Picture 1: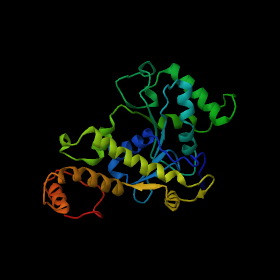
Picture 2: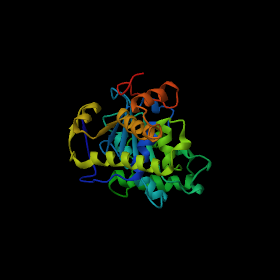
Picture 3: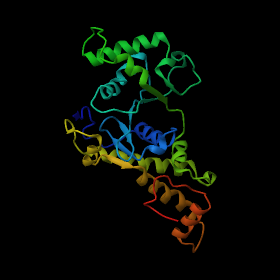
Picture 4: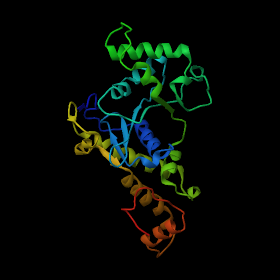
Length: 269
């Protein structure tokens, strides 16, 4: 049995950072093609799932202006809770701003495992995480503590908003799209994401991950693709007087100028 804890009660505004972490899952990983559903503020800030919920990607996002080791350790606690829970996740991701490069062994990396963090910073991270898990400063080592840390993926946000949109849209003629338009699309996705937080699910229980769909706190890749097609294709269509929107959409897909992924239910050519 899995119990939802620490959900953001009555939070009607999702942060840009949480939306970036969602778009990271959908377009910036080698396994992004497997992710079809995103749940919002249920298991964690965002969690990706494949069609049958046999694979889950867990993300905690923390947009702190400063991330000393103690704050990193504190930020890892919800990922740890999921690691020792009754549900298995294929990746545990901490999505964060760019860390102080002195913290890292290889400072050129923006996606890395715990082993890339220097020994001095690890001590501060582990002390605070133990305190958070144990509820005291005893220093006792929690169950599966070291195993958990070895599984965490650290992802630094180092890209523009437009890059996140481009990576999921696969719209090839990007020169015709302004940064302002990408910002508007991002805001629309963020607003759709934030609206999912209006319900109250604290202390609700589920037996299988797929049961989370009953809380209506999810968004599908197909829905996001539909929004992107409507906005990005519309930009070009308006410059073709008398041309049907559907005909132009079909032409763009046929000529491989845009690409759908996981959305055959929307349009077939």
